[in-house]
Amino acid sequence: METLTKPASTDSEASAAKQVKPKWPNGLWKTVKDQKFLLLMSLPFVIWVFIFNYLPLWGWTMAFQNYKPAKTFTEQKWVGFEHFIELFSDERFYLVLRNTLAMSLMGLLVGFVAPIFFAILLNELRGTIFKRTVQTVSYLPHFVSWVVVAGIVTKMLSTDGGIINDILIGLHIINEPIQFMAQGNLFWYIVTASDLWKEMGWNAIIYLAAITGISQELYEASRVDGASRWRQMWHITLPGIRSTISVLFIMSIGHLISIGYEKQFLLGNSLVTDYSEVLDLYALNYGLQMGRYSYGTAIGIFNSVVSVILLFVANGLFKKFTKESIM
Amino acid sequence: MSVKAFNATKSEKVFDIANFILMGIILTVTLYPFLNVLAISLNDSTDTVRGGIYLWPREFTLENYKTIFQYDGLIQGAKISFARTIIGTLLGLLSSSMLAYTLSRPDFKIKKFVSTFLALTMYFSGGLIPGYILMKDLHLIGTFWIYILPMMVSAFNVFVIRSFIDGLPYALQESAKLDGANDLTIYYKVILPLCKPVLATIALFLAVGQWNAWFDTYLYNGSKPELTTLQYELMKVLQSTQQGGSNVNANDLAQQMAQVSPESIRMAITIVVTLPILVVYPFLQKYFVGGMTLGAVKA
Image 1 (cartoon, chains in turn purple, cyan):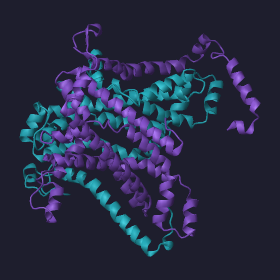
Image 2: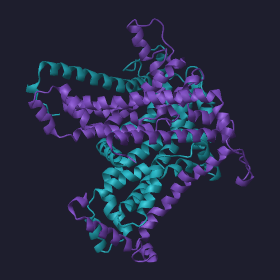
Image 3: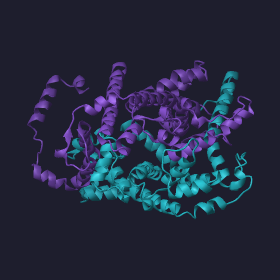
């Protein structure tokens, strides 16, 4: 930007001055002494992050070994890609991958779109007390644990006294209560709906904030032009929060495959396991509970690599369409 | 937002009414399950079996609550849950605010390195099993500290606080420096008091995270009754009675509960586990709405 207003020569002068300027103008030791408190306040936590976030990466070597907990690193037997080959030839793996992707995509689709519309519609609500009540209540489920949510969902869907069955029977849509939690083909929908119930209000916060940032003049001008509320939402509010939407979309794509295991673990049971098992649970069951550490680590690596690829692809697409980047 | 009422046409009125109804439905769907759980927990447990409890208890009683507080597992779980919430929140606040302060200082020489080092952790993790092996090698399994240490520094929290500090006038720090304050004093006396809103937000995130955690107990301390947490106890009770069997081995409390665990009692535990959060979050709402926005825009 500055080059537009300044002659080109100052730019090269500045960079020449930059080259002359030493990195440690006062000497390394003096700088360390001057900033000793800053170093003291940050370095311990850098070491912390190294131990708890970076050291586990070292554990990835396990996937290429036949890891035995009793042996030291040099004593482990290296096996190359054997565990990955075994993983890719396991039928269960593809089933689990299907479940992971299905639930991620459904969650992305529903869980991403619903908060946007909720925020826009909530913003259109008149009467501030009602609006504030809806907003406050909508955050509530975000703050309770998945354990509680799973309990609530199970209760609401249960065959004795579950409200959903009661309503469906009351409306004569069904005659017999449905055993929702025991039907594999319903599991993905139950997870998606539970997630929506838990997080919709919370995820709408950021859109509500973005909507507040849209200039009121735009609305007034469009009203003068005779735009209806629908048109205002469609042509002002939605475009007004477009950049927020795209940033959040890229971020959620990055997390697409690492959807976690909490919901699936808590809502699942032995009857629906063909639909409920996801990569992380697969790694847990095979890796930890059967003691196959190397195999479990290979699953984890697959998981990480795919999410990083997705993140780059999403960011690349984003760059192409908007000429911006979030990374 | 401030659409004037006299401008409303007929179709806008229809829209308003439809929108009002839709929001009313969302309100009901969100709130009803909690009220239902509360009603069942306050209803006589043998009467509950007959079903049909919706919003009000039919035979009001506090017996269920009396019963669950007689189980040692629950009392022990409550102690550990409170301890990890308080200690975890305090240590988490300390670490993220200190780091955030150093990263907000433009003259800090290794600022760039530290913030990249931190930011990278938001995109990858070692995964379940390398994490487990690390905890084992650090001898943290079977200790209380496994609830605190691994979660102490979070890059996201650091960046949220940093962008808040970036918004404060730097002149404040410079004048404090002229008065002879060192960096530690500035952090403690100048920055921290000004950061109260964002610290309240982060404190809520940390506290909720700690209070709601159950998987670490399951994974690392499942065989240690003295390190059990409320969420884990609830998880065991709910899983052991779930339709279609469960994938956990119910032991002690869960078994006792499952045998005598009428629905009312399970719901009473659910309320006990949920209540502390319900009491706190409405008061912190104004902070976290601001904090969320800050975090997502800048981080």
